[in-house]
Length: 575
Image 1: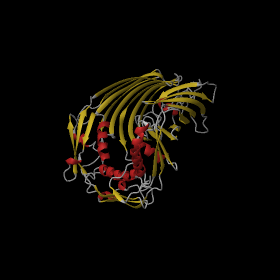
Image 2 (image 1 turned 60 degrees about the horizontal axis):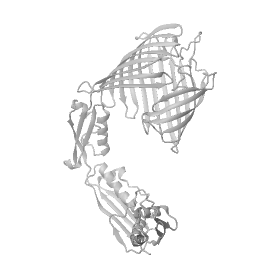
Image 3 (image 1 turned 90 degrees about the horizontal axis):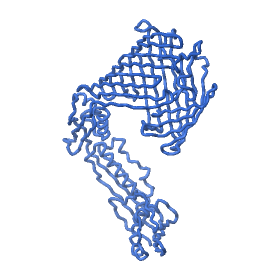
Image 4 (image 1 turned 90 degrees about the vertical axis):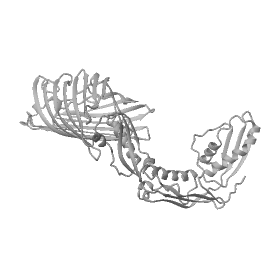
């Protein structure tokens, strides 16, 4: 059957069906020359034929032919030939033999945005599928219209409209003309933000969490950021932001935020295990706010066989309060280092100034007073250091818990001056670089470099907490936790001036939750930078992607020394 249509205007177009195909056993669509897109769209239009008999299929064949015609036209084929045949049998089949003919191609294409929106990059319509010479596809035509409407809704052009939306098809000439002209009208702006609900906080604190000023051009992303800012503050369990254009006055939209305050206290108790420290228990208490200014405090404690610590902190929000804060912190830690070769009892007190820089880096200025009693082999001592310091960190990741691509950078340095509430001159610095990339969805490559060092003329006065001990789950696998270290004359491990640890790992994703891994680690703690002796290991592992991040089980074999295969177990994000 040959289809011949006169030239006409189609105001809305014929959309390509995007539902999942229903491959009914009774329907057989044969397109010659073969074209999977056409065949699938015809099958989607007609759908499942159900349990029709031969006679019912004969009566239905005309309807099926009309539906096939529409499916072909949706993809630009207006001059097709469709033949139908019903084949009897245990399961009757309706066969459609289709010769689609030459497709209609676009001739004159006009895509234009007029008004203030024309100055925005976001309103530049992609023309790679809707340009002169391209095959007519009604779905692409509708997508271009919807793209403009979506951008108008996002950027606040609520009075915008199409002054021309025309798709004219001339099947006789096998050409079509498109004209889409959108008049944006004025752009609305965001007005004053009004907070409602049971919030006990100072209005000034809430106002400093708003990511925009009144009069800012409307952007739905800013409204979403406001919602996220309120939730991430930790003060509220429920947030609802209302910025309805219908409430606007002279294109100025009032913003109402309904807040539901959360319980001010959180108590946490957790159990864990790693091959570095064995079983461990963690206790946390957090008071989310103590006054209308949003101050907060908390207690953190962790207990394991080699290490017990407790920390207290009090936070004062700065400006902006979600990223900047002044923290007053204190902590006590008791640690047996390098399997009892060294012992440390450390008390720290001092303020920290946390700030997120416009570049995305996190910066922490600190001033720490450290008092430490320690044993290094047979030697005992006491160290007091006042150490101002600064730390920078940056994380770029496509997923915080289970990333496929990203990297983390961390740098820190602190120093003490003898005579200024310190009994030694020392500069202590560390740097860590981690990277991850995934190829073809299954092949994951991870790299890690850790370096650190102490610069001092009085190394004997540097306490164990500032010295370096390598080996273990997060350092050089295949060697016991903190077992890589310089030793004294008695063979006791007393820590090194410097540290270097590098790792390269390959993972293959067997399933979405399971991966196998192979890796090479190298590193050591040492006292001289002249050709340091590095220890190496190789290993195999398994990864299970849990809701809290990958759980890692590794078998690592050291390449230096007489050690055998060691088991390593750890968990948490890879970046």
